[in-house]
Image 1 (tube, one colour):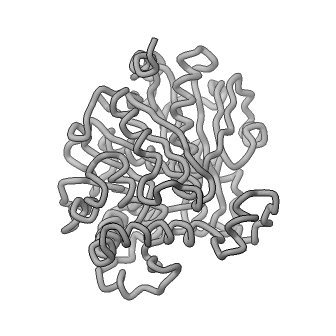
Image 2 (image 1 turned 180 degrees about the vertical axis):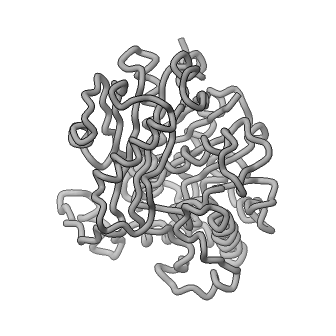
Length: 387
């Protein structure tokens, strides 16, 4: 059977029944990363109306599954610690779906917890890694540098002024969504275009407001069977399409700095779900940097190469615009503990359920959540449906 036929056969075979963050987000020096995992897990299971004792599948990234599972007091029959950066937790949804379909587990718990802001010890550089050998000596020392280099290439190809305005559009519109989300770290901080342009430089062409937050946060998702979802506290949100993959590690080995792997995962997830871009009501895109959003919109096929600046012009993605994007405030203004992808899914589920208050979008049947990891290295895409 062709691969897509197999994927279509399991479309809708798993549902998300619980989502939650840790009790608080932001600057939490008195909470460990494991505590953030546990808070989010308890909250998500309460959201689902499922006890911890029923969890028989466990997935996480960053920590070993046996460390976190021991802390939570669960003994899973299925376990997965796939880590490919910020897209990991989006990819875990596909893995949970496959495990449930294969009969490995019935209730899968995905958790994340990270003290990105409070634990600021300098990480030891592994001299055996390729990046440490071949990029670090030339000043490529982390995502702000590697992503800004990619953004500079985009400017070279498609124009500096129009790219700069697009990045500003994304930063300002995302902050407007955060101003409507009480959980957002930047909830009380407004941003004008002047604020954006006048913010300090980080790594040219990135201003401060081109870069994501660094916070402490936990998050969790509960995935189960359609049968079990019927009795969940809030019902289920169907997983209709998934896609995952990566094509490089070092940014210097990325063949086209303007074309991430979403060019594969987006179309696959849409085809598996049997829908097109125009069917989507909400899009949640990992925003480690404003450039990540711009180039992801193009790679996913919402617009063509170099067309992103026109696509996001005039605050189209802001509240009141006709393309709702990152409605929780995103990694730029809501939270970003180090790996953000799980939060795209949480917001998508809440929007589909109609639980987001002031920022609630009107049409809420189909949503896409998309994660990016590494140096524009990996992507994971899911299509979710309330109906």
